[in-house]
Image (cartoon, rainbow, N blue to C red; front, side, top):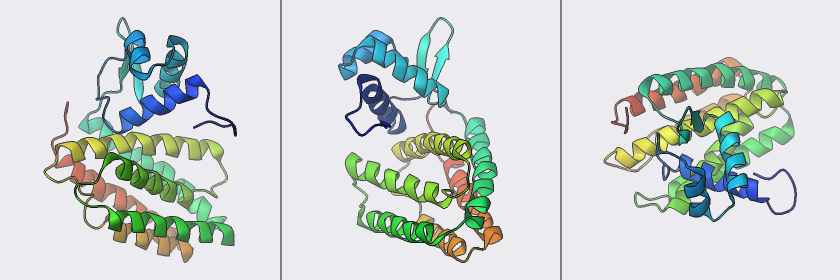
Length: 229
């Protein structure tokens, strides 16, 4: 997550490690994040840990509660529904503008990103390990962010990125409690349809397909018993 070319400083290391464990549901919703305990867990000093937790709080992955300090952000069905709806509003806005600003470089990057994601998904088996799952998640986010890349607003891209990260938690929590840890059927085909519409510069169809993609995912998550819901 470092913005420099050198190695990440302690605050960035703490941020990366805590963020990864929250997204992978190793740190679960509502879990207390006491500075001393977190510092010992990651073998990083208290000051960088506090800086990382404040940063994660601004991104909605950590909450700061009165008299309790920091906690992993809570989840609920209502919050999940609001999250998906907000993603649809923001991402379709960004997608429409990105398509309007489409160029050859972005087209080529999108095709390559899609093929990397599709290949990784084909190789994943039901008993996938954490490392492969994290790789797939990185490629998945990279593809979705590339769809929006030419929207012309770094602020909008930042908001979309944060909401994508929050959505990962819900998916991972549902996979931890569902009978099967496989991704839902049809997601790969939906990605291909979205890509085709974007390459055809059909903004109306691309936005509709993206919205459908998220609503189908939401419907699947609503049917699964997520912890603390």
